[in-house]
Amino acid sequence: MEIKLQSVRVRDLIDGYVNDANKGVWGYGGRLDIRPPYQREFRYDIKQRQAVVHTILKGFPLNIMYWSVVGDDQYEMIDGQQRTLSICEYRYHEFHIIDPERGTLYFGSLTKEEQERFLDYELSVYFCTGTDKEKLDWFRVINIAGERLLDQELLNAVYVGPFVSDARKYFSKMNCPAYKMGGDLLNGNAIEQAYLTTVLRWAARREGIKETSEYMSKHKDDANANQLWAYFSAIVTWVRSTFIQYRREMKGLDWGLLYDTYHENIYDTAELERRIHDLMEDDEIMKKSGIYSYVLSGDLRDLSFRSFDKKQKREAYERQQGICPHCGKHFELEEMEGDHITPWVEGGTTTADNCQMLCKNCNRLKGAR
Image 1 (cartoon, rainbow, N blue to C red):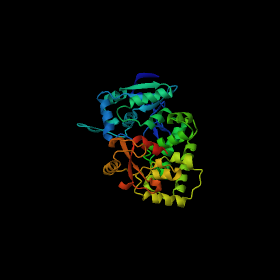
Image 2: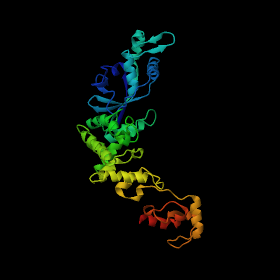
Image 3: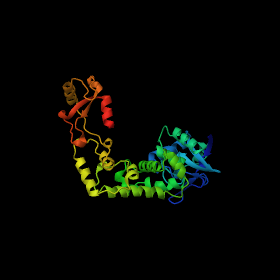
Image 4: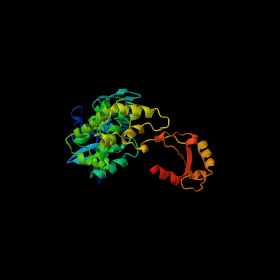
């Protein structure tokens, strides 16, 4: 990893400034990508932008900026985007500052001396060159304070390329295709990278890859994210066709895992819906979202049942005189756990007459059977 601190004059930063929906946002003579694909698209408010200009005109220091070296005399803005945009936009008369004595001041309203002072102002910039892993560690360090990049934004920065750019189009924009197709199945929101984080985790696991970063590294130079989108589309289509009634408990489930495990099975969807309906009405089941995994797997561990209260457990303990009915040994109350005599699958309920106290070891052994 090589990090060099250098000074860049404002006049050099704004040289060749372009902000175009198709061409992107560029400066520094066309060599600096001010808004690379992983950057957020938020903007400073007017007071923040004015504060940047006032800081420069007064000769006060701005916070250090960070650029990544991506090629021969080619750079990407990692930290400092909003300060850079404020500088460029003020120079090209897109907003004004307010002077208590002189009123509204656009760049063209400044004296020649003030303009030159603005253009000659020296920005402190760290230039970073290194491997993907080194850059990721570096980005994490510089984002400890201030407007932190999220973990997925850091990964987008490190593994920038056609794959990430295309994936963000599908999963990281307001009202993006993923939101329109399956937003009711996903937690979080697209702009904060929650959708992309989730789908990348699903896709990595499907390929037997443990870390999302490894998956992104593998696909970094893919021409597009068509396969990722096709995978997500297949998951949502399977969910919609398998579970014909939407319920709020479906939001945020690990649909990638359920799809990978069960999508080749054929289900009677009407019967599946009837079972889900009945289970939703069962007061014994506390974790309703687990019902969707359970009706596919049949594994009771996917469900969470009502537990016996203190009174019920104390009554059972006294009735048993502290003796565990499985191993026949005596235990203190805190060494035992409430257990259903008749299991839920056999119609048992969480009532006092269906409660027995087992020692913790016997209860674990019973649960494992």
